[in-house]
Length: 229
Image 1 (cartoon, rainbow, N blue to C red):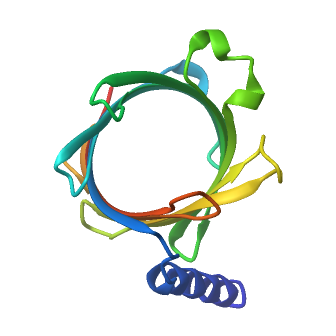
Image 2 (cartoon, one colour):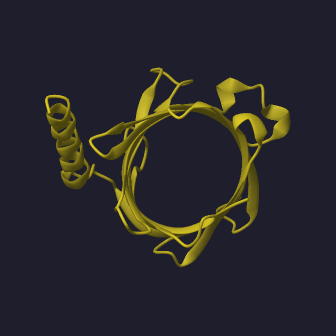
């Protein structure tokens, strides 16, 4: 009993933070919709591979924003620690309504542990974005970013429904001052399991930018499908 009470108190405080944290000031606001589909493959020896295709719309969801394709490989050391690395290719609309290509590589480690019937996890990610493959080595021209995400998940016993809440921060590593914080993301999600290998999920996301010129506050509805081989 003495082990459950501190964990329960922590969960209640975190839930309250996610529900009632005030939005940061933004000079502009936007509502966006994101659509994504993901295919996962489990490989022998604790390895896995996934591919994700995502489509985003901005300007109150009336204007095409970008298309993203991400390939990720991962390894599970045990039920409590996973590591992943991936490459993302992006086609983003520029001001002249043309498409500009961008790329991003990332590596992350995720630790997870059950707490009072909930799944608590912390992911630490380092990502590097660049506009051209030939400019990959020019760190001073491109963004090296650290992202930290805290997640609480809960499966409703006897149903196919799972719930999740996350809070995530962005920190720029190759700027002055170093580790400049410039964005926060808060989200709540519902997932419905269609079968043993597929599921649908809906996420509502709030993103707040700060410490940047013309900060943006974004409200996002994400609808996704996941299939596992």
